[in-house]
Length: 513
Ligand code: XMP
Image 1 (spheres, helix red, strand yellow):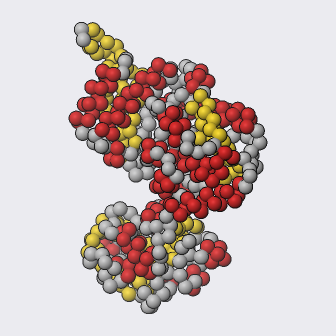
Image 2: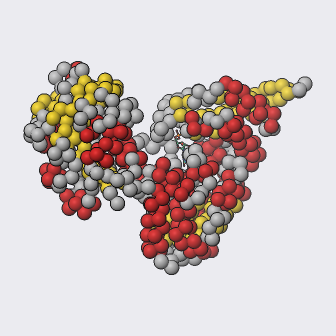
């Protein structure tokens, strides 16, 4: 398989670069800039991309490229800091921009020389996304200038003979017009890629290697019903069938019909599917608990206990499957300080203490979320599972403000279903990244028929976001909101008022608890 190495110099868009490469059907991995040359040789990339980074190449402690990298005979695309590294190491010079004009941030009109392989077939002018305070004062020998902006004569440099390209802007971000096309040109025109990274092929390879690894062994997996654990389960099911036991812990705080849907999706495989219906246990542990973090902790712990109890019945296994995906691997591997912990996320996937297994397998470890979904489709999982919106591990528990009761969970389940149903009927699912109902613990006066009511207020929440770190509230058309509101107050008992949450994140979070 053809591989690209994304060499990480600390830029904030590194994952995005890797995703773009994979979107172009070429496999890539992100590795730290300190990766030894021997490991890079062994990896055998057909091309390398040097990422951006927060430093200046002339800083004392700036991360530098091993000069050997330039002698591997492998094409290089340097992005932003990566571009300045090329200039710095190959005989050019980089200085702090003297004028504000040469320091470029944001959308910048840029002019391209389309005779350069990087810009082949693209328009001669377009908007690029810049974010640099340094400037290439002198371009290294053998390099030519291939793009400019009003403020900067050397927006892109290239040495076509060696296949070295550098761009000051960020082709990986959406704000850069034709950015992905430039990356594709680098991959196909410069590195000679053939596009051999497809999920169909990956499925075959992964199934084969899981079979080889597991042999006749027993495998255990905790299924949450989320995309990652479902796809991991399907992949292992495809590979080793009846040697797999999936323990699906239904905590009773799922959405309407969710448990049955998950169970149905796995009928096609001959696996040992254990559904632990633990609603009563969870609800009794949660009785009287109002504090959100406490709810999370109880659910996280109880989940593990129920899983362990089921696992004990099965006895010793050889492998435990985890649904870790590539963004988690990149984040933990690059040693970056984690973002401040706003909420503890007790998810399925935490390691149980008393399960008897020898080794963990993580079959999705190298895949991005989009790829996981695509793999799920290849494996024949239904669309409602693979394209579902994120659903928090603690489920409806953190969408029922205050104390949780079965009655409240049932009301919320129904209201949430109606909201999702109307969104689907209006064809709006793709415009909303996460949307759900929240049962507030506020009650207010209403009238129904001739009578006065004193019932719950339900909140609708919908956000549009690419990373769930920041989010904007979705501008749902009024007529859709109206239909949702009318249906909920008519069809769900004890809800007499509907409000729509119009706060972005920050300052609000996506969930209410
Ligand atoms: P917030 O509310 O922090 O949510 O803006 C960001 C994303 O995280 C999800 N979320 C959770 N997921 N366990 C999870 O598995 C949790 O405890 C949890 N809390 C929030 C939330 O649904 C959104 O997608």
